[in-house]
Amino acid sequence: MTNLMTNSLFNTDIDRHATSSVKWDRYKNSDVLPLWVADMDFRSPPEVLEALHQRIDHGVFGYTSPPDSLNQTVIERLNNLYGWPIESSWLEWLPGLVCALNLSVRAFTEEQEFVITPKPVYHPFLSAPTLANRQMMNIFWREGANGHSRLDSGLDWELDWEWLEQNIRPDARLFLLCNPQNPNGRVLTLKELERLERFCRQHNLIVCSDEVHCDLILDKQCQHIPYASISDYARDHSITLMAPSKTFNLAGLGCAFAVIPNPALREKFQRTLTGIVPSPDLMGYTATEAAYRHGEPWRQALLAHLRSNHDYLLARINTIPGLSMRPNEATYLAWIHCDIPGISQLQPFFEEYGVGLSPGAQFGAADYVRLNFGCTRKVLEEAINRMEQAVATAHKLAG
Image 1 (cartoon, rainbow, N blue to C red):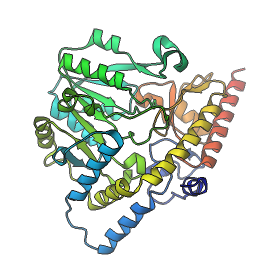
Image 2: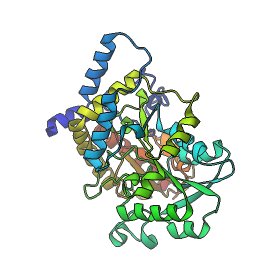
Image 3: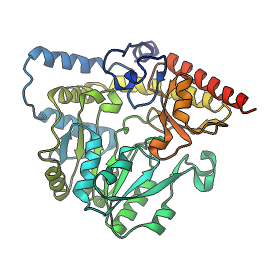
Image 4: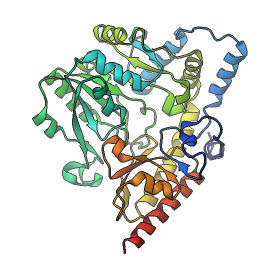
């Protein structure tokens, strides 16, 4: 797509008020710019809209199973993008990935056993063990090797494996992985995935790998590698979660899938969900197949827009005293550190100045906020201007 087409797709204001939008209705009676939940403000690919119109025109909306053509589309996509050959029987279709996280905890652990999860992380990772009466231990993200910067260590964030290896519990059974990582935007390297595999092999752990942001790699030097693809052991001791929801802005259609190669794990997972978790609906199946089969030009244009927004945001944020962020390797979610005099509650502070952000405490780090830059450049510029004004005012009041 040309730059002109990209601008028309992703820099067009779309009024989402009065559409029951979770993102926009939070502030429907104010002028707060909502940059919180991971929901982009762009129309989905035109091929998706066309496919949905055709299905609506058919006029019959009965119970629907995933079509064979959809399974084949997923198989081809994972092989073409990631060199990962899978089989149709490995696929389990779901209405979303949060339920899959919770199902995995219940299927692969017993009560009071330990679930390991990185921290900070997308908040359902932190709630799933507690909801299932499991115990949780964390492996913490730290800023580069020995606290150094990306230029020194080659990494912006890294997992503290030394701490986990010294503190691992013998009754740990499951590792919840988020890769690409939400909220810090890291894409794990092959070396890092291999270290995880060795650790899980040593301690007999199953990995549930949420890879929903895998199609949104911003750093062209990075490559998404599905954890299950790195070895036979990883394949047979893991469940991989994916969806078109983030990539193609289809979250409201509720369609996702798990890839579970091991038949014993697959049977446990299916037994846990039976009678409780419904299948996706026909609109979800229709949109997913259209997006995966025809949406690649749109995705490439989206990536160009997100990279441009990211670079602008990175440059601006790091000029504001008290705010800082490291480069994202993936996702459209910026992880911004805040050191603002006199301000401890960051979310309401920024809302007072017209910017709605996700509080870092929700992810396990109270001195951060998460900003969704999947928006028009106009909205992003205005949001940063407001944040700059907010921080300047706080510094002025602090003397």
